[in-house]
Amino acid sequence: MLNKPTIDFKPCFDNAAALRVAVFHGSPRKGNTYRATKIFMDELSKCGDVSYYEFSMPKDLPAFCCGCKLCLGGMLDKCPSAQFVAPILDAIINADALVFATPHYGASSMPGSMKNLFDHLDFLVLTVSPREEIFSKKAFIITTGSGSAAAIGPIKKVLLHWGVNRVFSIGIRMFTNKWDSMSAEKQSRCEKSLRHKAIKFYNAKKRRPHCSTIAFYHMSKFILKNYVGKGNYPYELWKEKGYFKKRPF
Figure 1: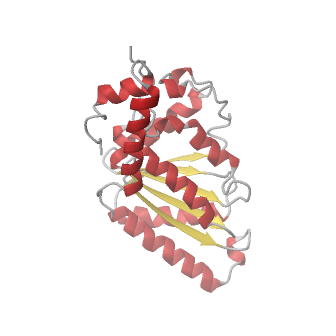
Figure 2 (figure 1 turned 60 degrees about the vertical axis):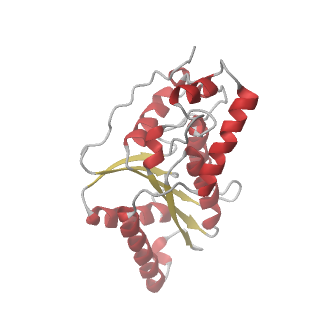
């Protein structure tokens, strides 16, 4: 029997008619990345009626993923961190757009708190229990630091494997921990770029899925048919949703 998730999804945004944006801050520091994100959000708000729901890591997800794999079997409510994961998943499901903001860190290119977020949401990948609501969403990645672009790749890959329709990004390369210590000219260039990309993001429409998402879908279908098999959660979920017969996006 198919073991379905029992967590209820309820809207967490104030204005259901607005562009609903879930924002995930990968660091508790209100430094360069936070400032860049606020500039982006400010310009996004000027484009139309926008409603935000913000999460700050690790405050809103203090527990590390323990690798119990209950979520991979559809038992999301049994996750030891369900009280923290549920509102995050709720926001992702009900948002129209997602924003992930993180500084660049050396070891894994992003803070452990941001990686922990993706560890907890690993069940969203196409090979496990993809959500149809995600297939129409767009996402934006904001990174800052000396190697800012290095943090974009891993996050973009995860989002495309969730089935996110369009992923945009900006990596602001800087060699200081204080925004105001940059020259006025560079600050102006960074702000102009952020505002330009915010406008582009606001107006971006759904389009054909990214080629890597399509390729991952076919790979997932092959894995579930040949290595997971009937009677197991991912296979039965795909069968019930009709994903084996037709690509869901």
